[in-house]
Amino acid sequence: MTTASTRPAHPLDVLVRDPSSRPPMGGEAEFAAMVADLVATEVPRVFAVVQEYGERVDARIVA
Image 1 (cartoon, rainbow, N blue to C red):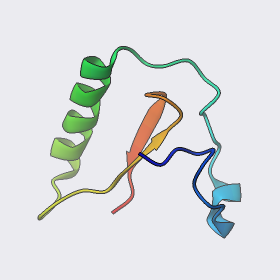
Image 2 (cartoon, rainbow, N blue to C red; image 1 turned 90 degrees about the horizontal axis):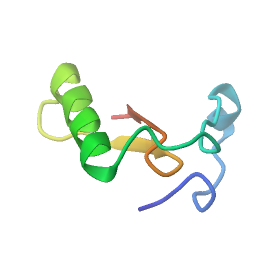
Image 3 (cartoon, helix red, strand yellow; image 1 turned 180 degrees about the vertical axis):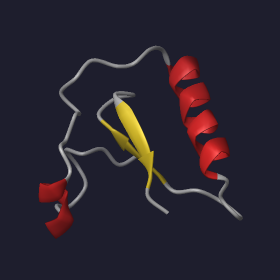
Image 4 (tube, one colour; image 1 turned 45 degrees about the vertical axis):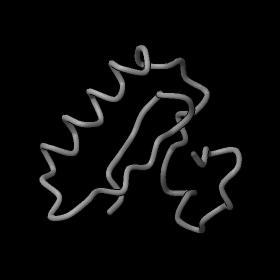
């Protein structure tokens, strides 16, 4: 998995606050369930690309 510290910088990254220094929002299973709920809410057509910040700190659907 690519993390904020290993991925190349993108020009639009300056517009998004990087919360990777915050503590995790639960264990792996709990975070995976939250991401699955987020994907189900956004209803992707075929698949979803999820960007994770830090180690289970936050996530968003980017495509």
